[in-house]
Image (cartoon, rainbow, N blue to C red; front, side):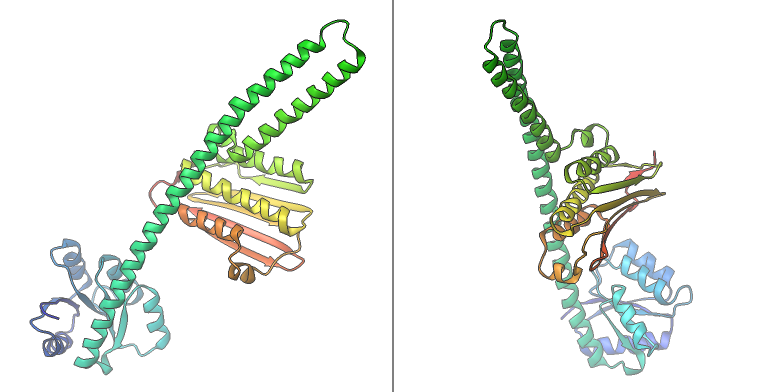
Amino acid sequence: MQGQAVLVIEDNPGDFALVQEFLLEQLAAPWVLRAASYKEAKAMLEANETSYDVILLDLSLPDQTGVPLIQNIVRLSAESPVIVLTGYSDLSFGIKSLSLGISDYILKDELTSALLHKTMAYSRERKKISSEMERSEKQARNFAQQLNQAIEDERLRIAREIHDEFGQQLSGLKMSLSAIKRNEGLPVELEMVIEGLITDVNMGILSLRQIAGQLRPVLLDKLGLFAALEWLFSDFEKRTNIETRLRVAIEQPALNKVHEIHLFRICQEALTNIVKHAAATRVDVSIEASGKRLTITIADNGKGMDVAAAEKQSSMGLLNMRERANLTGASITVHSELYKGTIIKLILESNGKEDFDSR
């Protein structure tokens, strides 16, 4: 390992000199830079003039300390692994530091050149693997997004074909049958047959509309998510005879189209699971909006389930809901008790990129 660039964020000259000495012992011609404060470190990291192989961070700087310091340095570190050098011997704090995104931490009292060298080597490899996993996850998420978009486009195309082609053909057939029925002198038996055919055609038209609506509700494209959800829950009650009580907030944020589709499909999947598995007699739905947060809660009084077991068995319904929630940046929780029902809560918050704005 030659020519490694190491940024040491340390306000104590003596501690910096010791760390620098350890680095010179183990590395060939390292480039060691020092920042004596958070402000100085921030300026160096934001300048992007140097790609640091490792950042060594002291947790007690004159202008920032502890958790906020860790969070800010990790945010600024880009691809560089951050190793905390700390005087805190509290194990819980060390574990918490790791959860904040650092690669490792070393107690200053235990610091040796060999330990520092080993920790730096391991941290670089962990950071490399972690970065590769993040890139792979991002690629998978982009692929899932594209796949879902392709599916939605195909659903929309099929729904339009059903409505425009089959619907018009059935309507034309109905008109022809009605015209024949109006002819005078038809036998009563034939009139009855024609009346039965007209009834069958009417049922076919109704079925086509329902199928097209399930594939892609017209309301979702024309009036948005909230109107589409009101239709979805109303139609669910009519089809299943399960009492469905809906409470919608007066304030309704305007969502982007991609989020609207995913949220609609999550609710649709939740209702499908209720029909298949819950044996419920009532569903309570709450849609609340507050500032930059949208919360959708779907609760049933069914037989409940073992959520952990369902997750372990890779339930397609739950996986589909979680994947769609992940694609929108929303969080979804499923709480269930046997014989007491299931509660699904979906929360979407703005991430500062105008996911939605209040009307």
